[in-house]
Image (cartoon, rainbow, N blue to C red; front, side):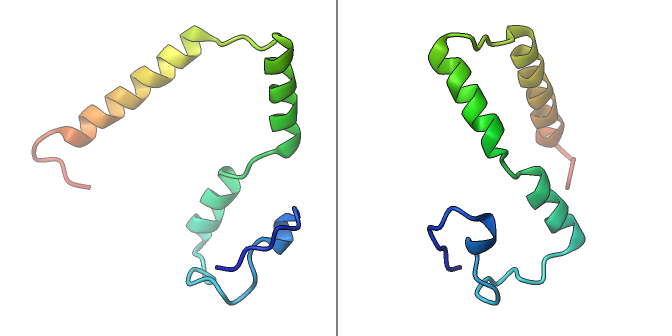
Length: 81
């Protein structure tokens, strides 16, 4: 995969150089879900720097609990995925 450092998303991957150039629809959807919003990143960074950003500890704890539950399901003997 060839990466150009121009800052433009369309320039980051040159066509035909990636072994996954024929991505499935599911792969495309995952890539879209994982995309980052630069404006949101800048805004969160600004809020952290200014001391305005607060962590929602209940939300963090809830997400950790969900993750732990999922890991336990996957770790059960006899469960195959």
